Image (tube, rainbow, N blue to C red; front, side):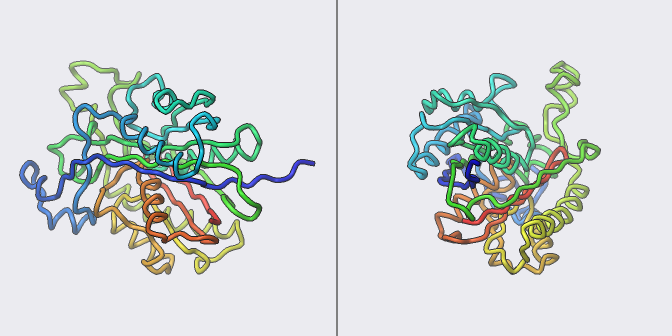
Length: 329
């Protein structure tokens, strides 16, 4: 009988564009003040890629940092999973672009489209490949260049988002360590609450789609807010119960960075002290699939995660999708 394998995150990395766009910069072009944006979202600034930067341009340096952190060479990677809703192009997969660029000559590669839950989906899929012994080392990347699909005249969306990339190397770890449990969910009936209508086979590019701004992100903010606040609490409690753990056992909760009011409300409902909740939305805005891995890399760099820390990653976003992963560090 084969011994059970545990999957852990053995290295992380992140990469952000140099350009910082503050709320004061946005005041010059859109009807939204710094006070208005801060109060509604908690965002102070965000990173914005230049016009020539694609998703892979951010993903590659994040991946290389994660490999160095893990002490793994690119040719040891068996699989690359890129979570993104802003790929370089429909195909080939952005994961294949990364695979070629970093020299991961032995790796399979594919993309996942699960919006802001993408990284949690990615590491959950990777966990199955490692536990089944199909792969030993897997690189999971969350990357977005959301600035490319924003209507910069729409204050209800353009103030919310930013660009960035975060990466993690997953591999086998000691028993009782690593990923203890993951749960992924979706509700397609809420798909129209957060979407990019144009560009696919339903509404292919045309003069009509361009004139009606269908290639820009569309969101029903109030509905997403209600969904997210509820789902962080429900997903967290369900995952803890599965692992026979309590809220008090959490050392760090890393939720998707969508809105500080969502995160604060969820923490209050969970009765979880804010010092146990990671928030960096003020610096980066909502980076969709990149938000959780960038936050994870920062938390590790600042030693907020230590040996034996219990860490929960909670994602939620377009699809609608949501998911949670419980990790014993």
